[in-house]
Image (tube, rainbow, N blue to C red):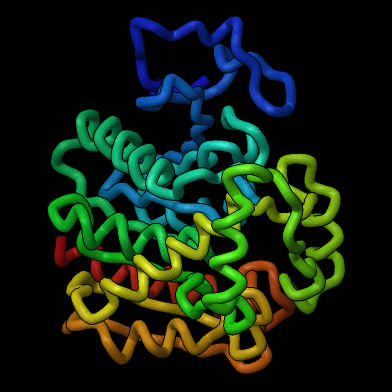
Length: 304
């Protein structure tokens, strides 16, 4: 267990278990404001860290899926940290029952506060993927003093056109009575053109493989709406990367962000043929995706 684990007087970690059955005493974690145990993951550079970078994972997945990218950041001198959102991965909570996405933002702020208390002089960067991209936009916009530079990977910004006002009205009507009603599922073949990567995703026990719950669908719809509202107000530095064949989060959302944001330092990179998880896509897309992010971060480290 790493030294980054937060200390809490009410911590009963030895009696609480992660989703996979470990006790929380065996893993890094913090206790959120709702007394839920939130699993954390850290990747440290060989020497003294030059900066911090928070990775915000997407819907239904977990922080461990970013182990492929984290070493590229530690080589630059970043201390990389992430947590499994409430009801995701190893963290507490009924699987993917999202009553209010604001809980994610609250927990992210708590985690960042823990890290900034330990490393007060290090600048903070943020990387958000998919749903994590939308959360990153809101989080940094709401906390401008915490972070200035953001990488957005296939962000979930463009709303599903099939989710009409009539459908939303009916969903809200039934959600209080049937919050766990299954209303849809994800086509995992849209994740990557590499079928081996799709298989890894489909067999990962920490990934959510069941249908989307009604209450969750409503909360995600609210996340879409709230993210879209702030696009013209965004001023932070960002690099958005998206595949033009992303069947999960439409590329039009990233284009809209790039067009509307007030940011003076904003870059967009569209990958022809790219699917949703560019880091797990076929070559040369996956390597180009990683090198583009590394180069962008490297250029901004001295400016902090």
